[in-house]
Amino acid sequence: MPPDHFARTPQPKNVIALESICGFVYAQQNVVLGNAVGYSAWRILKEGLTGNSGWKPVWRDPDPKPEYDVVLIGGGGHGLSTAYYLARNHGITNVAVLEKGYLGGGNIGRNTTIVRANYFLPGNSEFYSHSLKLWEGLEQELNYNVMMSQRGVLMLCHSDGQRDAFARRGNAIRNQGDDAELMSTEEVRRLMPYLNFDSPRFPIYGGLMQWRGGTARHDAVAWGYARGADRRGVDLIQNCEVTGIDVRNGRVTGVQTVRGEIRAKKVGIVVAGRSGQVAAMAGMRLPIESHVLQAFVTEGLKPVIHHVVSFGMGHFYISQSDKGGLVFGGDLDMYPSYAQRGNLPQAEHVMEAAMTLMPMIGQARLLRSWGGIMDMTPDGSPIIDRTGIDGLYFDGGWCYGGFKAVPASGFAFAHLIATDRPYETAEEYRFDRFRTGVNLLDEEGTGAQHNLH
Ligand SMILES: Cc1cc2nc3c(=O)[nH]c(=O)nc-3n(C[C@H](O)[C@H](O)[C@H](O)COP(=O)(O)OP(=O)(O)OC[C@H]3O[C@@H](n4cnc5c(N)ncnc54)[C@H](O)[C@@H]3O)c2cc1C
Image (cartoon, rainbow, N blue to C red; front, side, top):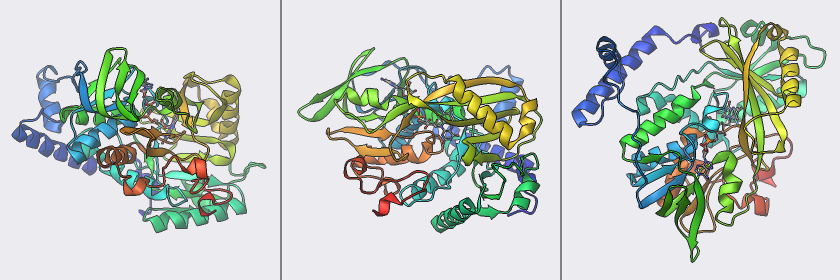
């Protein structure tokens, strides 16, 4: 751990230089391999000097073919990463991603971009640990700047009991092989002097820091995976809503879309907040409810919040974007809905929590707010599983935390579709836990440990 944590916030120049060199080398490899040219410092220089006339669309715009080996329904983060890893890890490239709107128009472009691997319970911890490792190499992997910023994620605690619970969680995270540091009040104060430490209701007793956590640019992640999948031959088909799933004799045979019928040997449902609607097309009723989650951003400010701060007791979290906006949010709107916008009482609640934690935020002007549809499972953990229909697979139930899961989810779902076996980090994400009650995976890791009952 470096002595001066603030020194970690700006991207060091030598890292930028190193990334540029890596990008350059990668681009040259692509030229040698005859692929489309990658991004590099050299390319930016050349385009800058030649009127930016050489850039090409980042992915093709193909018409759907009559048949594919695999059709993925949903062009969000998870659908695109699944397509990428199907091609990259399993050589399955006769794949279509069908997206009803535009790529990245769903939750992948609406979240607050927090990436972390600080889960408590086995089942979740190894999955998110894998995801964080994939995040750490993602820019090199995709040759795309996803603006991964490991600025540290701090969960605040406000009582002795909560601090004890965080100590246990920190030990579990370390046992998993990831980093966790229990901080005292004074250590937190040194990092975040702007917090209200002496609030009578929520005095700050310290917190649990994960330095490898942070943020990444959400839509760049979608674009990076889209570009990578397209370059490996995957068809990304936008404005192609799936309206039906064809099943014959217990086996999936294809899908109906607004652009006609498409036959498929295998179909993956990866539609996040629309999971219930799409699964119903195959006659399935899921243990999932869709709820709205809102987020807010202020006008651009000078750098003031150098980390991600989570105030769980107040249902509030915040970070500062590279453009300077304070990006923050709270809890669900708490009623089922497919509307991608939130209600005012929840907005008021979030503002109150913000003022409680950091009264200085009252000086900032709110720029905009938005909402996304969350696919909530009863235990807060996701599902990556086969369905009762041969050839039909499901990935969803990401709740309000699926952005950080995008790399590992795609990796695991591609493995499941390709091999019909769960990937080792996702073995617990089965449907049957909701039927049997065995191995329920309380996402927060509070209360009774269901998976031991
Ligand atoms: C305000 C907010 C803040 C969040 N903050 C965080 C965070 O900080 N960290 C974190 O880890 N997670 C966060 N999340 C959660 C995260 O964004 C989601 O869990 C994740 O993005 C969901 O997966 P996805 O990217 O595949 O979803 P989406 O991007 O929603 O992809 C699903 C796609 O399926 C498409 N689709 C739906 N129906 C059909 C159909 N019939 N035919 C074809 N296509 C269809 C949709 O158009 C959509 O593009 C947040 C979410 C919100 C809304």
